[in-house]
Image 1: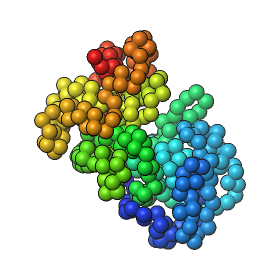
Image 2 (image 1 turned 120 degrees about the vertical axis):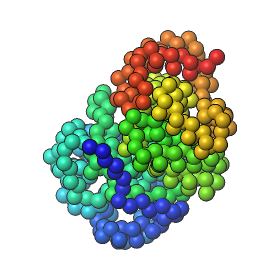
Image 3 (image 1 turned 90 degrees about the vertical axis):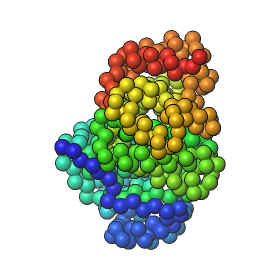
Length: 369
Ligand SMILES: [Fe+2]
């Protein structure tokens, strides 16, 4: 069954966070649980609660890559307090945590490991997402990634698409490296959503626009130009709406394994593989046509060349060797990278079927001459 989901409302404006109380009024939210982490709360906590006239509680103990146990513990800590709204303020981990807490509030006995897209879930709290980076798209997605012992669980349900997303780029970091890595992640989300074999005209429209805006504005955003930062922030959410309704694909499958093996941040690592993935996926006629359309939109002659040119301007690596990884070490671990990537569920959405040999070839080529 074809389905396209996104939040009921997206509030977007620089400094709109100062109107949070007004937004909560219009939602009839009177008792809110704010989920965040210590870093975000030390940066923005005061500003967020300053104008808040509602009853609220802050849980700011979310750690990166939240575990099932940490959510169960937090839920117990909340005791019998009643909330009508859960607000996530943060990046992907905070969103995952908040979505999980919203499930536990609605279904106290639910085993989070069993959450899946095929069951009916009805949350009895409103979920509001306030992303503090411009990249993950999890403010508009139905997915949750949790850690359970050694396992990473990719869970999800359409009911977990936040009811409201609030986009305020004044909450995003000013550090160039973070803006680049998260912006490149969003850029790759848009490309992968566009080429995914589950893409639709809805996702294509969002993905194309996000590519165009990020391509033209990421450099300005890195220089902290406010207008460019606003546009990249909105585009990251558009890319999120696109990929959470179609999929991410080969660049993510390659980047996940590479990033985990060599400890490279997510956006940098998926971004590195994008040019090779575009070359590889161009063997599919339909995908090639889509890339041609992007070339016309960006007014460039060659998509791969122009992405590499953009990467050079931004300082985003497009060769493994640029990351200072020694060739002996890299090539000795390619089998390991291939065997991890071939199991990545994102591969299912790639427009061209990918085998181990294809992965090996791309990994080799990506090292650089
Ligand atoms: Fe990503």
